[in-house]
Amino acid sequence: MSKAKVLKALLESGKLNVTPCCWDALSASLIEQAGFPLAFMSGFGVSAARLGQPDAGLISYAEMVDQARSIANATSIPVIGDGDTGYGNALNVKRTVNGYANAGMACVMIEDQLAPKRCGHTKGKHVVARDEAFMRIRAAVDAKNEGADILILARTDARAEHGLEEAIERAKTFREIGADMTFVEAPRTVEEMRRVSEEVEGPKMANMLEGGLTPFLQPAELQELGYAISTYPLTGLMAMIKAQQDALDQMKNGIFSDPVMSFEDLQKAVGFDRYYEAEEHYRH
Image (cartoon, rainbow, N blue to C red; front, side, top):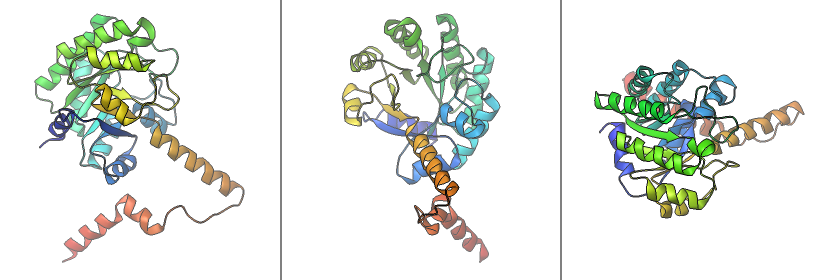
């Protein structure tokens, strides 16, 4: 069964899928090693890790799809890829969807922000008019219907600029066009989250961002609201950055404490055990 079909089954399970976010092959592999059945390739994380730059539309399609390929090759679980605005007009959107499918992504997220896009919880973002927003999702769905083995996640950021009603109406139309899942970014209250879940048909995604605009709910609360997926774009990234900063501060001050993990565990985390097993297999 393809990764897209595995993801579709997860969405139809009726259970909330807690979904950590990755930014490179190693972070994706660690998510799978931890036992999660699904991961999300975060544009915020990829821009930070690959460019050392903020998620403000600086990273290109080529860089994102290359990162998606590395992530998909490092994992056997389905991964949802952040496709941003689709990187242009309808034909660019179709190219993006096909590129992510060929890279091994199980799903691609296409949004209605005005390019250059930015993180959904930061200032200065704007959305395109309804017609262009719907055109993007129609092109993405067409690419899928024409043979791309991938699901379509349609995102709207209209809540910030035009209010919740507009965001819900856009999400409803995305679903009517054929999106497999919808995502209303940055609702402000639990009641707004509830309205999105109740008024928009089909699987919905909730974005749990520490310090963001949306209430940070526990999985049981999101399950009760009816969400299919909850993503955590900053949790792992913040842990990685803080651990690296602390280690560098200690090194700068001449402090070399006991390692936080053994060399054997480090080798296992990056796959040496699998490599040695394969090497031994072919030795004979």
